[in-house]
Length: 199
Image (cartoon, rainbow, N blue to C red; front, top):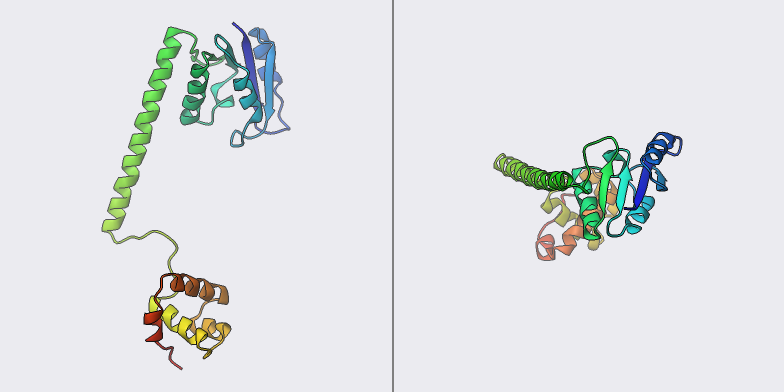
């Protein structure tokens, strides 16, 4: 069994010595080291996984060094399993090269699926309750439809400059232009022609 190590620290100022020493004591000779937040692409982790083949073992000091969360861990374990490799943590009871470790992996997958389902149900229930209270989503519009229609007609017919219309309506010129652009996109010029701004 070939052991491949992966060590990561959150910033370039931190040191991987603790992880490297632990990996060395575990008999790991090849180690991919990374410095940076786990939020990024983690190129060294991708290289480490790509170097694995059937029977190989990815060794990490702690699971949080390799995975951002449960969902990320499940994805990584799936990639390893697809090539016949396994993963083990030196400080936690996770070793997918053993039957118990494989069972743990299956339990983690079931927990992750349950968590996703529960989150989805909570979100849908929250949205339904909010709709029942009359809540809507998105940025509230600064102008009513009739105001936009009147402003669009007044500007297109040359009655007022956009800056004057914006001042009359109490919004910025950029805001007025955005509203007019969206209004025109809905093809409501027939209504616009029937409305006029008060002079």
